[in-house]
Length: 433
Image (cartoon, rainbow, N blue to C red; front, top):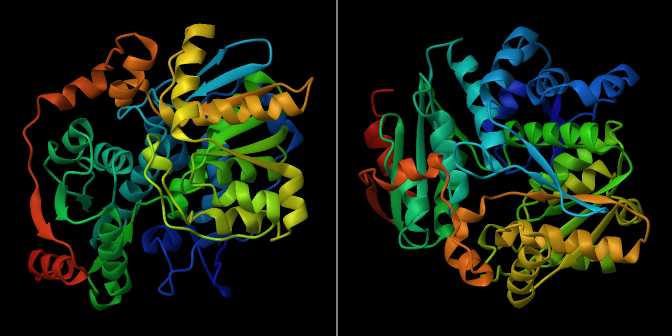
């Protein structure tokens, strides 16, 4: 399997290089040369396959010779050792819970798979790898948990000071070992700019491999397709699938699975008021915008990085995308209202992001009588207790995996915003590499 640069399709590389570079020097994303079509035999067996088994079979098609099949089996077995739960809320609506991993967010799937790939790559040479991550919350926690203790890999997480929750900060700053948290006196955008600048200058460090672990990395994207095979295998083909959209990696992975032959009837892109994709699906005009802060903060993205990949899956054909994907957006008032109403109706607790996906599915089902569907729940409601509890009148129990972070001691490096500050930090820390 080859991967090409979306900005320059003539530039092609293998899976390993695409993962270790993260992004091309011209900031183009890597995309698989083709979406593999899965066999009829695979789909016949799908209902009885475990998630690690699905991951091994599908993942091997994307990694090719860069990761042996036996190693892929081990990576998936270790990465996906927690449950994926499907619940039926009524006769037309199911929920796919993706928050039962160590950090209680769907990002555990991609982060743990990526860490397994890096563990294998680092065993093949003596070069130190440095994974840079800019985070506004959940991504950093998932990466930190997944890469903790991986030999030959350092993880450096940049986060905006005072702009993440206490629990999220503890997930970033209490692990130590090969995980370093940098507390930036600035915004999330500042953190992202610092990471991108460091990556663009990484060619100057010959013995050090810098990469990004944000959702633009192909090793984060591919494993997100695995749980769609699992869900459809158990719930049946012909369902609509509603996905909350932030950077749009999750729904892109669903579209990849659908293109491979998985029986997803229709995709629903559900967003908060950061509505550039729903607007595009309605008008055919894509207009990036400044992000707007909402209670579904992980979806506060005004120019989704993975949307270019989603469009490429449909050959940049607007009519083809519109026929397969519907978009809906909802403001904070509607999200809050739905959290309370869904609890009263079914007893089910939604976090704000999952509530957006639930609303999107309801909107689509209302327009298409007779259709059934499933929505993706991406975060445990305990991560948003301050929002969920007043709306439902219920105390939300914190999972044990999250409680363990509450007692940890914070360790962080303070840094002023500015690309040069991170560059100087890396030069000082790795001057002998």
